[in-house]
Length: 198
Length: 397
Image (cartoon, rainbow over all chains, first blue to last red; front, side, top):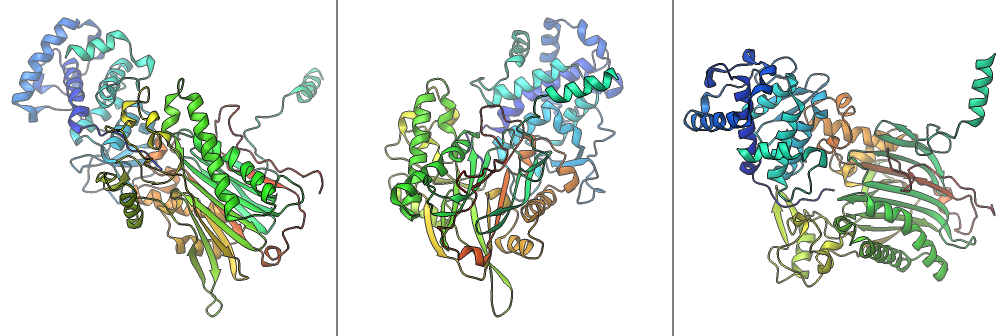
């Protein structure tokens, strides 16, 4: 048995998500052209040196650019365990993997370990709010392939935990505005400010 | 030498192992990850087999089989009681039913000195009233308790008569041999109260003629007020009394407009069946099983295999089906942790009660040892329902 509560719109869920993605892409490409960033440019140490003010300025610039040329955003390539190729995939996921579809009907075969990641648990929760628990078919996540690829890249690159937490907060805040839902350890003022700043 | 002595002393003073995890197969069930099972046990009217698989973070399914005296008095009547309680919104209500329903039933049986539909109905009502009082008491500190509820399926075998009482969407299915062909037919014994059934939607509309939105399609599933699939339950007091549909209950559970009459009710549908010599077994299970297996598929699996482990076999078949729907391997599905596991299947509880026609026809006055087994889970905090089995020998036997 499950209980279905107030619906959360997909847009509300992904709205802050998009900002965080933009923010992270910024972090990935501080030295290079904003639109030509790639996984190879990833330099985690630099993140610590960026001031909040600079980030806000850059985020605004980035937002303008993405609004114009949204389709040109490049996400870090999903490699290794993640297989986003729907053409050659067999009906059953490979051993040690599970399978999800994205809202744009892309098929992702992912390692079981991903189910332990907080971000995946959150995506599953949002999927339940958005679509209910699937009774007859596979699981569909309420995001497109590009967003999921980003999440995968984030897990693969083992990025700083607080950024992941910030993303969780952003999603949770959008889904449960009462915020009573939020685990207390995720509610540090700095992270809240980080979200609110954008 | 010293180390041997230390080991000896340690063995002497070591506290008993965790009482919630029973590895032995004789008295209790076995725990294997999220799976709990008791492959074979004996009740008054034959054998039984029981299995629980957990998917929710806290197991919401609770279950019990009680065999022996169905009354507070040792004079009986004697029989077998089976209960499956599929909770939602949390485990509190199903645990409460597991702790109280059978006790109420014994009390009313003692009062009336026999088993009857009336006894069962009163036991359900007393359980609902008891939970309502608990919510009233806990409401100021724990308002969330108002949004917890449970289905309840009960089977009572007494004097060759089978009583089936149900509210919600668990199901009891009888396996009966057709004499002429030797086939085993699946006969559904319970009436369900899920809004996916047209008659249930009609009933809701007739009970709430002024509310066109009493039942709506949400995520392609019919739900009462767009919230819940079942129209009857124990608990869910936020949908029964308007005084609990307000702050401090989370806003997502609150209905926009106040309601005058209860949206859900707690009246079980009770049916009475005379058991026949060709009745082989009854499968009691929460909807977690039935969303993957048809009645006939389940009956065929039980019929075509040994009694021992039949409940576990049914759960395995359901999980294999769940894995197929999620396009993954069964062996991988089993590795998924509780909590996130709920996205792959529901909690599943199965009790298969085999009917030995010689024992079923016995008079209900024959005394026998009391047997009490409860379906288990893992990681339950202390002071909550013990998931272990508790075979108790009645003093007078």
